[in-house]
Length: 339
Image 1: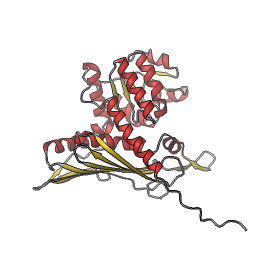
Image 2: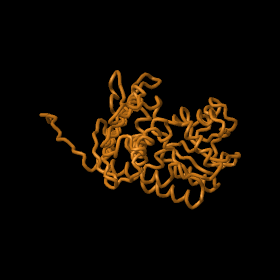
Image 3: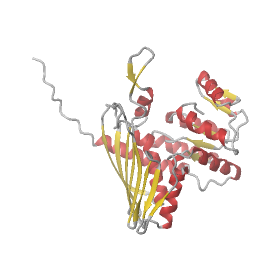
Image 4: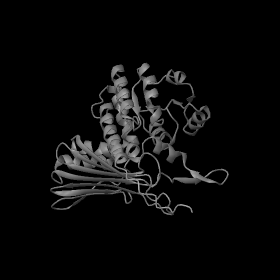
C-alpha cells in the first residue's frame, strides 16, 4: 500500500528478489501512480480502490504509504485480518501510534514494523559482538545520521527553484528524529537489550518549520548505558558536495565498535586485536522479507520488531522532538527599523 520512494527502491525489489515472497498487487490512491509502479516492477495487479486491493488474493500486506495514512491503512487491513508489515514511523503522533497497536492487537494479526536496519549484516554482527562481551559492557553509544534529504530545493519543469515536496512532507510529519531517528533509537534498544528511562532533546533550525531540521536526542537506558542520536535533513543541503555522515559507535569498558557507511567498514577493537565485520549497507530489505515470510508461514513473530516496539520508539522520538521545540531560543530581531 503506497507506491512512493521506499516502496520503489526497497520493498518491491526485495519482495520480487527472494523465493519466499511474491508481489501480486499494489495500491495507491493515485491510479496512474499505481499502474506505473506495477508496470515498473512487473506486478500483475494494481488498484486505487482499497477494498478491491484487499480482496485481490493477498496473504499479507506491506504498508509503505506516508506516515499520516498508516492509521487508515492498518484499520482496513485489520478488518480483513491480513498480517501487516508497516513502514516506520508507524505514526507521527503518539495517539495514532497507540491506536494502530491497539487495532492490530484486537484483530489478533501479526503486525511487524519495517525497522529494516536491524536486518543488515552490520547490525546483526554488532548485536552478536555486544552479546558475546567482545568490548565488555557497553556504556556509551553514538549514532549519527546527518544528510540533506536529497536537497531542500530543486528546479521545477518551469526552471524555477522551489522547496522539495519531499522535504516539506517530512518536516510536516515531524522532522528527522521522527522520520530517520526512529531507526537508530530502535537499534540502541535492540543492541543493549535495555529500554530508555530518560530522554533529552535539543534542536537547531536552519529552516523555519515547527520541528527542528537538525536534532539531538540523549537517551539514558535502564542498564546505565547512554545513547546520543544525531539526525539531520539540513547537513549540507545547500552545499555543492553534501557529504552525508552515517556512523555507529559503541563504547565499552573493554573496547569499541565503529561502523562508517562512507567506507562500508565495520570494526571492533578489543584488548587484543581488531575484528573486521561484513562490508554492507545499513539496510537489510531482503533479509527483512525473508524473516517476515517465515513469520507469516509459522506464526512465530517473537524475533521481529513489534507494534509495542514501534510505539516505544515513537514515544522517544516524539518526546525528543517536542523537548527541542520547547527549548527553542528565538534570537532578537537585529534588523534596523526604517526611518
